[in-house]
Length: 165
Image 1: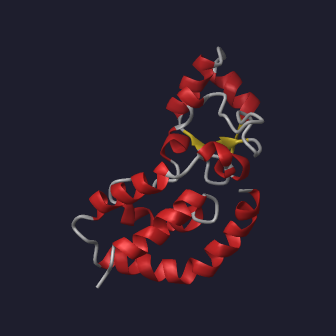
Image 2: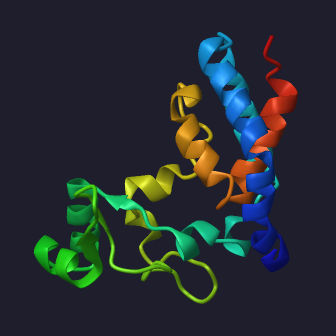
Image 3: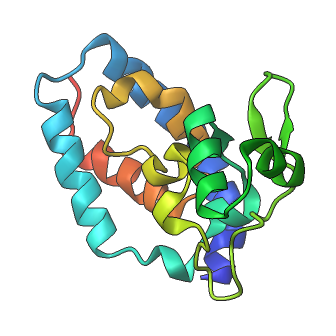
């Protein structure tokens, strides 16, 4: 897995132009059954994916934290929301709350999330490949294929199964 994760950014970069063209075409001519097909592809890929062997998303990127995330996690950690914010978060250039540093503070040595049951919405939904109206987040997917082997696999499978005319 480590070797594959090192190669993933280059693989994604090599496929970027092809993927961008595909997604541009997808936005112009979205198949009516795209959400259904994407759910099947997502499910098939994730049946073969063990996120605990990877955790690259937790090691290399940080989620955005909503106010609801902050309150829920702070309560779980028995802290005041402001204390949680002061200890773990910073405000980024887009004025969003993000982790002060990566890898994620809550990722343990075995790739388990110590706040899994209350993790941020962005973590619960990552890599967003089962999202309704998937074609609307192609810019995000193009970024995620360089981080997440499952997202890369979903896009490759999608290009095979969702043939655009």
